[in-house]
Length: 360
Image (tube, rainbow, N blue to C red):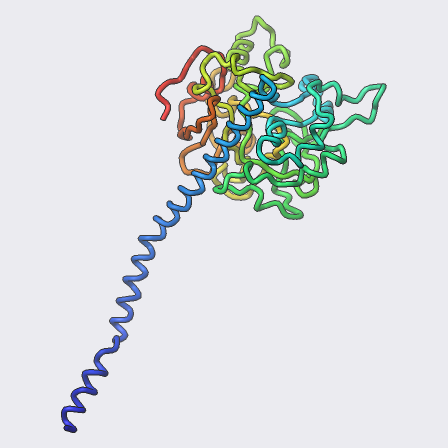
């Protein structure tokens, strides 16, 4: 009996793991985790990309609902064209863009109320003159500024989450198109941002903005001679959302499914739009973005590199290899970041007569 009991004890002791066996199990688990983690991350990014696509889809539906109500599209932005010739007049812009007009159609009526009471189509209503020297940017009015810090979830891509950096002293977060003269040179103009960050200015952000075609203004507004080849290079690619204009769907001769209405934006980063250290972001007050810096200069030169001065003026995303766009018919298309410059120009133009077919 004693010998049998001793044998059972030895067998029972040998049922445990040795140190080597334990290390082997841990190594196997580590390998399995390393194999599964990329798949989990890809699944999460796929979900974020789907949510981003849904946000863009909702913007398209909001525009169609707006058009169904008013029989015309929302304007790109109310803008004082004189500011092109005299940059100090940038203070005369309303800085109210397309997304603001869509707030009632995105379940954000409370945010729209301060705008809707007095928002007008004539940018001269906001220019300083001898009669009313106190006119100012629309966003500076107390009623409007009281709501501009409210973040609209539908305006944010979960893969970028620009709003996550909205914290005091976030000096690396500056606002797009809110500037005065006297600062560093940027894009040929001398300017500086006012104020220095979204917290101070009470401006929440967006990852989406409308497409205005090649440039935000016409050749005449840019004082380009009608005899210049540049005039046609600008005007042939006029997009859906324009300054001080409300176009109609009937104006989109290339077809709604062939014309970009909205696209993703991220801003500029210290080492390119896929990097870290955000230099510039987008307020949901802003107007549409042109395809110019994403495609070709007026001289036909393709822009390249990741210079911040160009990256924040492009449609960009944090989805690997693609940028998602809302087309005029409300559908959402993902285009490669390597899409040909001419294709982007044609998709941005509403009536350039160069229809792009075969989009995925």
